[in-house]
Length: 237
Image (cartoon, rainbow, N blue to C red; front, side, top):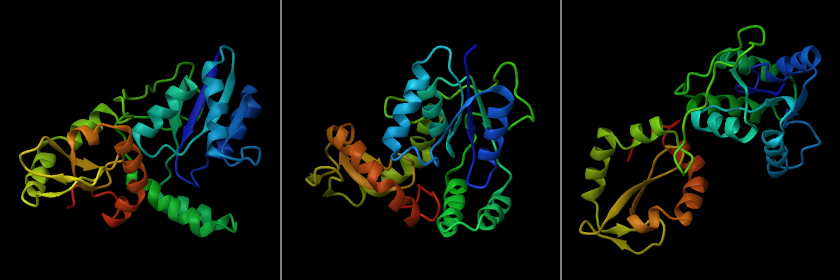
């Protein structure tokens, strides 16, 4: 019987501890990015893709998954049968990270804050119920072609987005965020934002904003823009 369990949560949530218990109780194979055998994220994702293709695999996979979009991507990659969220709260997680006394505890504390800054429950991922359910109750959200959930896309392009677009329109002409050429109000243009919704980058030609160059640029700009917008207030101009 195929069994692939995904455990999500911030650093210090207890994912590794629970995963080891599941390994002992159900004879599963553990996939944890923190294990030394994984030298890169690319190598780890390749292993997870193999899990997704296998028919009779029995595994437990650990991913941080702060957003519904990230959880959906992980679920699709491994073709998960179960998904659970471990969320004891930022104070508990921070205390546990400090108590580990690892050399990277400062980065760990920062990672806890980053996880909660971007956290959402659009997909209603269930909390760990205490024991493995016979049938998983979690289903990943549907994603757009660019990997964003439909609910998140509606939120970004709703009334607030239109207000922000009107504000940016008053600033035109401005350079395109992708190609650098001028964008005028008379052109067909988009209000370009980072893929994680952290903030607006500025106006972009419609043709530029839908290309691969825009996706790559947005991904690189996401972390910096999120920090500049104080934890994910992506409506800020």
